[in-house]
Picture 1: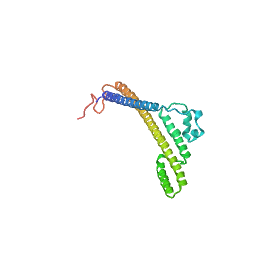
Picture 2: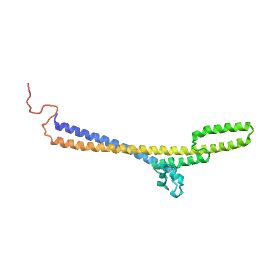
Picture 3: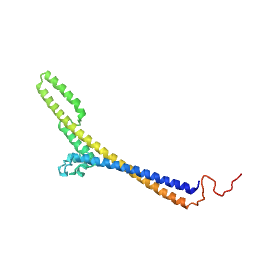
Picture 4: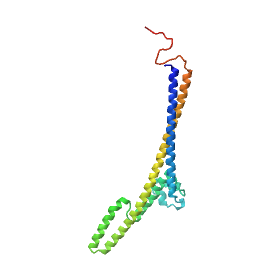
Length: 221
């Protein structure tokens, strides 16, 4: 086979691969754009606005190292995955944490309050059977507080989970965009290599061959 023909085949093949890579990159960018717009639309529908910086308490701004994002996004309407993560992890959860302490159940979650309520109910029944109405009344107050807190935590955990799921979609969109850029870069590299292949093909003498016997070469018996 002539070297020029071989170079041309490889160069054309490179262009085909470049086209395939670019097409795949375009598809990924389209999907990334869809995910980004979906996140923005869903968050916009919630109409959640961060509290103004002047309205934030010291506890809200310093609860955890990441809580400073509440100051960064202060007064802004939620529209991005990063904002959703900030609101869920450092605003909602801080309020849930404070509510649990205020109710007398520090560190409690929706799940852990179930057994606590069951135990309090059992203690109330025991106190009533023993005729200790004062203790039963005190335990009932604790049970009411636990029940109210459990409802609060359920709402908070549900909203927090939904926002973090939306944040996850935004992260996937970012990863897809990165993958698309890598494909575009590879497509560009293939185009450059293909051009180099064409240049080399037409700079190569027409009679030069590979994987064969050059034209005019003596054949040994």
